[in-house]
Length: 494
Image: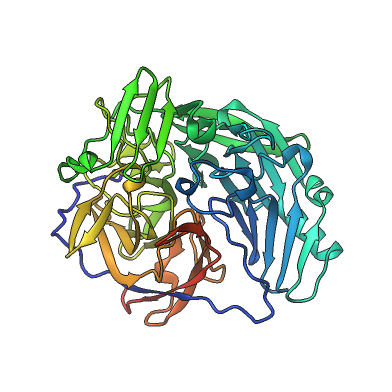
């Protein structure tokens, strides 16, 4: 597998062969305001953006739960060419599952289908909302839905059009499958195997898991077969691990931060945070594991084969929270996990990714000439901050800070890895639970990785946009509708 010795913090590769610039996007004056959303499922079809589920409020620490009134209860469709915003109502039978937060999703561009698995949220409007993790596998015919909207609900530029639920119902198939009852995992497609990989996640019941929480402790792999009766999983298999994370030496003191109080009684854990909030978890099946992860990052990668050739692969980064044998609020996971076609996942224990472990906007790019894989992480929530050119570990749970740093994980052909922190910063504390939307005109490999060598040298090129997520402020947090453009200029020589 593509592994090797990690470089020390003080070591350095040659300067990165590109320069990134992030700046606010300029929208036409007759373009409807973008919705403020985070933790949603997403599809892009010929530049039209489709957002399903997620939240319209801020970080859940603001209210200790995920109230129904903060859920995104319509499919938001943004047509930037027509400058129209459609808000499609959710069918009654799927209104709660499609409004869920932190679902796993994959857009099949070839067939125009958006697959949404699981997710967490309210399952009723009564009482505490009966918060659950859904066991639903939903397939939305995005191409058909967009054709219906443009044909039957046209509007002038600037229009926000309410669309009845019957329109989505005719383009939606839903099945139930316990194997997808997860939230906070990540779903990626591997062309080399024509399979999806579902990385980690957990099953959370009750307001913030008070009724029970179970991690998957595994990577699940399958094909999604779709037909008249709806989607189904085919060729299902799982991968586990016996490896456990090692607490970094520079993080030994973080759990002693003032205000943290954690007690364990049997399967129940009670945590009081420095901010005074109290969380109670019931975890009947729990243990330390490198695969005890949720709310992580993942992305496609290219694996160098030599002579300029490469193969598609997958990588999972970060996630929370680690579990020690002693009472501990937990830390983030630092070791990446890599998947190559036909091989079991491999944990790169030789390298620690110190920034942006929580789900955030990210950009994968590859240089075939150099054989180097670069993955860019835009801000988000981090276990570490950079102070005076040095990493500083921060406390776990809600002690993790939001950051404006943009970092690059560079992986050399021999497997050595390095994290570079760019001088460029995000304009605000953004990125968490947002998305990077690739510019369709930019060159990409068959698995969606940006082809760095395919860009013109010494020329600023728009390669994508960052949208949505959680925006952190001094007084709290909120869902963001900020749209940022990402421009890249590569060196003359690949």
